Amino acid sequence: ETGVTQSPTHLIKTRGQQVTLRCSSQSGHNTVSWYQQALGQGPQFIFQYYREEENGRGNFPPRFSGLQFPNYSSELNVNALELDDSALYLCASSSRTGGYEQYFGPGTRLTVT
Amino acid sequence: AQSVTQLDSQVPVFEEAPVELRCNYSSSVSVYLFWYVQYPNQGLQLLLKYLSGSTLVKSINGFEAEFNKSQTSFHLRKPSVHISDTAEYFCAVTLPYNNNDMRFGAGTRLTVKP
Image (cartoon, rainbow over all chains, first blue to last red; front, top):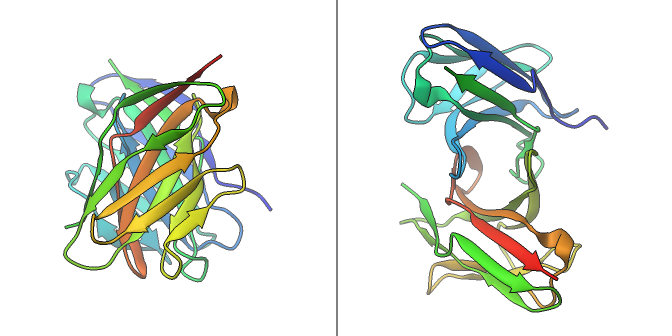
């Protein structure tokens, strides 16, 4: 069984640029959630995708957008990057028949300069 | 909306000593509760969860947590810690049958000293 994978591992971008982060869900999981974890803080919910549709969104502006593909992998896109977007971005997959716990990937460390 | 407060940002403890990491939640309805552990430069790993039933839940590596509805708490305990338990621990809460807005606490840094 393959776990949740994320790419890239690290990324450095300049303020104003756009970035795309990728996530492959665990086998058998049809739900993907994205979180932002700033240094020294707990993860903050960005949004969730279930069967290719957005299924809930946290308090993040529209420049944070996402996609889920038929194989349940997912992308997080961030436009017009700001310095405060520097964080660890975590992807988690889950299954509604699996007890609702989320399985996290290792994260992508984004640095905006 | 539901929320979680972790009362200690850092907990230093000596090896083989007992430890308790405190978590209180706030919600007007019933909730699911989770503890996750994060090792340096890694993602979060599920430690244990409370969905319903027995209020005492246990992990395979000796941690346990007790759901206390009257005190709205879900404290994590271990009777004897190891150096390898050094990590960041997060308490999290969601609404039943719906994990699309999991709320995490700020985390507790457990440091086990020899």
